[in-house]
Image (tube, rainbow, N blue to C red; front, side, top):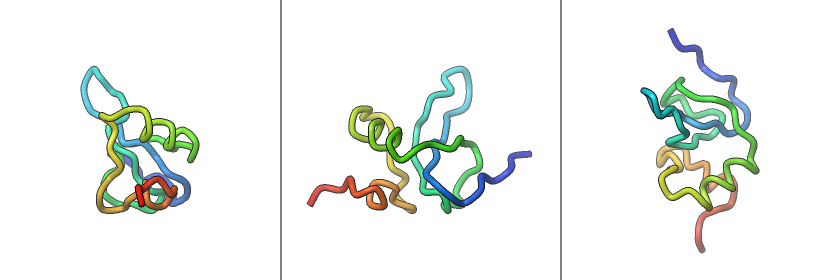
Length: 71
C-alpha cells in the first residue's frame, strides 16, 4: 500500500518497472498519485527545462506554480 506524501514542495512521479525514472512533476498538494519522491524547486526547474520526456502534470500545473510557463 502506498502512502501519500505530505503536502509541501513539488515531487517527481516515477514510472513502474525497470526504468524507474521521473516521468511527471506534481505540486505538493496534488492528490493524483502516491508513486513519487519529494523534489526541490530547483531540480524540478532543471528537469522541466532540459528533459523533454518529463511532463508537468496538467491538473496541478507545477510549471505554473514555479513560473515556468511561456508568456
